[in-house]
Image (cartoon, rainbow, N blue to C red; front, side, top):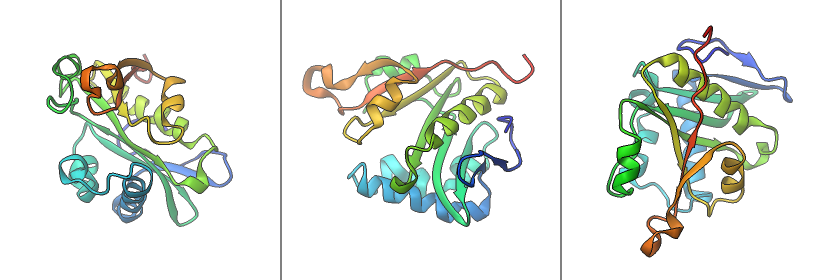
Length: 193
């Protein structure tokens, strides 16, 4: 994959997995992966102010030029998702200085990087992160690559610490904030640069 809008399916070479830019036919499967994750891994359930994008994936990720949704398929099933949105974290609920550091428009926020439990430990999340970073670099106008994670999700904190730089661990703030960790990743060079 090149990270550009309209990429074609690309076999990952990993046990029949195929990574591709989501199409309308992937939306139902992607939504199922996301909702299963928020109910079972995050244990928050669907919260409209946090998860409205999951219900309308087309408007959130498929239509906007500087946003994308990638899926990994295994046969006919979507088994992993990852997205880039063109807005930074909002304050509140995030600390004001985090929102100021990662403003909407110039921040590519990685989100919805979820892998079904039975497909974990195959490098799919790392592959998604790499391709989402390439997309952000090639989309133009982004100056930072941001994400946040819930350290209560098994494996999430060590995974992100292996790839990204911690900006703020809210657990260390007075009152513990939301208990999430904010990270920044290096923005790759655009293709051909």
